[in-house]
Image 1 (cartoon, rainbow, N blue to C red):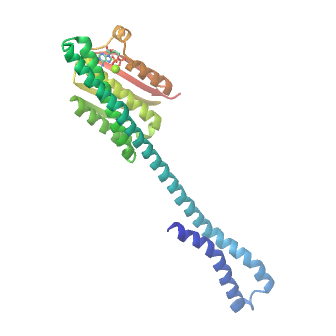
Image 2 (image 1 turned 45 degrees about the vertical axis):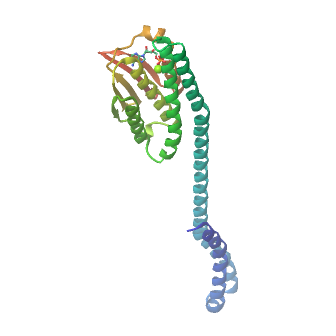
Image 3 (image 1 turned 120 degrees about the horizontal axis):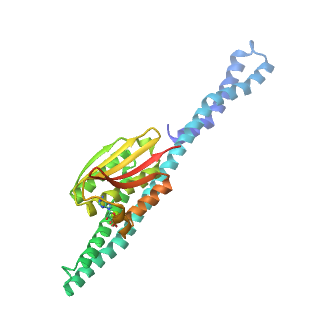
Length: 275
Ligand SMILES: Nc1ncnc2c1ncn2[C@@H]1O[C@H](COP(=O)(O)OP(=O)(O)O)[C@@H](O)[C@H]1O
Ligand SMILES: [Mg+2]
């Protein structure tokens, strides 16, 4: 039923009820129901009819209003995301592109093609560029994707990572959609992505295993590779922020985090355990 129809029905039903009742009473029921009893029955009848029908209609009206509100909120989120994507694209992404052109020019001018420091700087910039592009496409893509499940979305992200970096990923995901809050989903996805990029950057392998399992008290997520391996010293000596950021994210969410080498495998573990 449409909003307007419901509104009119709410207005008409009590009036119609009283008109019908009064007509029937005066035309047919006078010999059976006294005037006094009829006067008492009239408001009761209107009240009962209102209770049964009008209340139901009010409920419908509220539901329609609620739907409209959610629709509007969703639209606003979409608009905001679109705006953010555009700003990222027109601002940061363009500047990065310009910077890369300038750096390449600089490299040619000073013959830096074989300078490892310069190549590293170029590589870092390419990473930042591709991360920014990824963020832009996520902003655009995930907005349409909210209708689908997060498990579908993780699958989509993995396929995209596989295609962009030409690596093979074994995904074994059994964490149920409802076991993760929306914030947890975002944070966990960011951690998985960083761990994955680390494997590509540092492990010297093109095979990654990503596992998610439910446990008795929560869940556990593992990112594994069989590459060159990791030890405490490399982590301490590294000047990167990736692992520190994962650690901070995990601490903030109340998860435990660890990374280490077990039986020829580098394993990063994020675990949630409820008390
Ligand atoms: N899967 C991995 N295999 C081998 N080494 C790794 C792996 N993940 C991280 N590392 C090591 O840990 C260091 C810290 O990683 P991170 O904090 O992400 O910094 P970044 O990636 O910017 O170097 C890296 O420099 C690398 O030496
Ligand atoms: Mg890193």
